Length: 159
Image: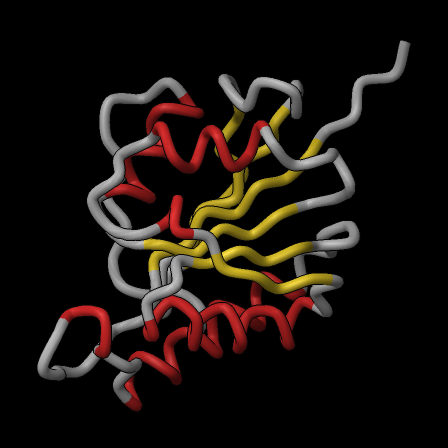
């Protein structure tokens, strides 16, 4: 029996500027450039029919738009389950509710994305800096409870 491996990329939104509220913060020019560099590297991974889902906060949506274009995403959407402060339960429910249609990029916030990556990879801690992404191979797309860290791409490395 052949086991399908799904790649899940967990990414923290790019560096953001200031605004009246946290929800309104947009990517700074530095953040946008860093996301573009990481997105280019993600595009080189050859993800299979990738979908992109982001937090609905502005800076995450802007990050998702840049990444989606670079990787040739087949779908782009937002989910409240990726809003900051929700821990791993929301994103795990989101992952489990998706059909195994291809690879996936989730764009959210720290510490949630790092906690989720550590949970899936069964390691104590993963901290993501702004614009940083981790690619994880998932052997059982039905549970998303175990995976192997494939690579980490940061804006500084992607120069």
